[in-house]
Amino acid sequence: MLPGNQVFFGGVEAAAGCFVWVVLPEIKKRKYLILDLRDNGGGAESNYFALLPLLYTKPLELDLMSVWVTADNIKAFEARQQRDDTLIARMKEAPLNTFLSLNTGIQER
Image 1 (tube, one colour):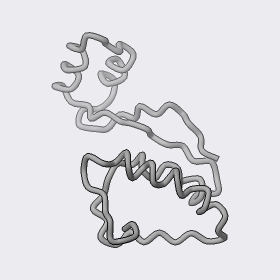
Image 2 (spheres, helix red, strand yellow; image 1 turned 180 degrees about the horizontal axis):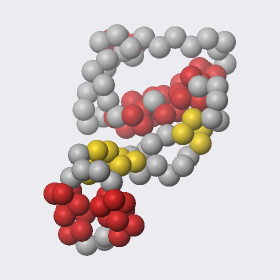
Image 3 (cartoon, helix red, strand yellow; image 1 turned 45 degrees about the vertical axis):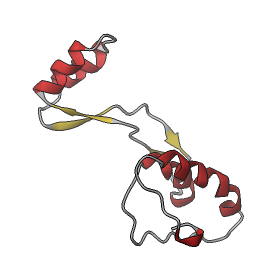
Image 4 (tube, helix red, strand yellow; image 1 turned 30 degrees about the vertical axis):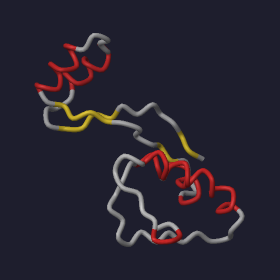
């Protein structure tokens, strides 16, 4: 929760992400980091990506996105105007009703 009991709800995730980037230089000056996540209703993962290098000391691979593999989703991806045939092929090879990582191989250090 931000000062004054201010919270972010759906539709303002970008503001929460911007808040993290604004305070990140100040956070980096501190020896310790305490995150109070009580009463956290969730949100977009991208809002905390900037904090991950502060929490992990070893290389960290992030899955930036994944797709749920079903017959209907494969058909939907095939029907797109801008098809990604490589992704469609990967989806067809993956077991149904599983998540397929679209990881770009980004390493956080």
